[in-house]
Image 1 (spheres, rainbow, N blue to C red):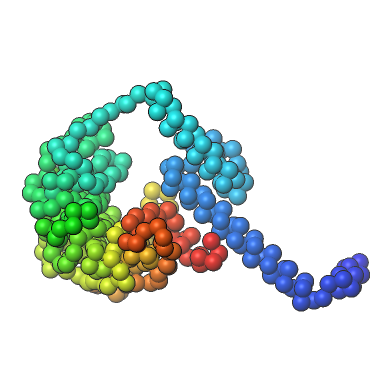
Image 2: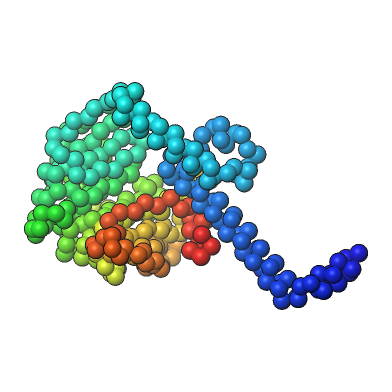
Length: 325
């Protein structure tokens, strides 16, 4: 029966066409699977954790229509916004900082605001109170902020609409608990537009990154007993945004770290960077390397290139090529 079927198929289709159809079907299936993973990651990034009713209603992720789930959640969010505008939702909390807020970073413990005055101030979610100003300050606006459980990292300069020279091009490291200034890094020649702090309990806990309009990415040491400068690399254009790729975890435990990935916006390119150690020894020195870049067409919309981006792709997904996604 199989031989008869094959003979009939060969009668109507040549072998090359059959092989092309089979190859195309496999590639299409791979693209569908990759897109499904990407939509799930989009959902988690945009709306947080997967709702219980969604995760419990399907036997596996493959049984969930993530495109439809994303649209439904977005529709619900729009309804909430409309209800707010019509007065159906009342403001729960109102927080007042000592100066205008220019930038901020937050986690499940609180929010740290970078102020127009060059100072920083912390908001505690548990007590719902705004703390005192951090000790010391930048001499210009706080353009970018990053934090982890122990530290706060901030960068300063001209926000871009004053048409004036920057008064401060420094990157500063603060103790999150006390607000005390720990280190001040000097090395940029133009406004600092992006900073990244890694988890304090990991191997990269004593490293941090900064990038600016001078097209430089600099890797710094948070260890006060060593020289602050570690390494640097040059981008192909002004960097206006820097974002760490979320670390991969199994349950609540981090997987062994061999390197960390960071995305940088360099004019109209998204550049993937890797921070990795030269070896597994404790005294190994980390390096920052450029892995690849992707050009984003910004013609007719923004002559200054990329001004912001977000990263939701998990490490195992990021290994897929852009063509597959």
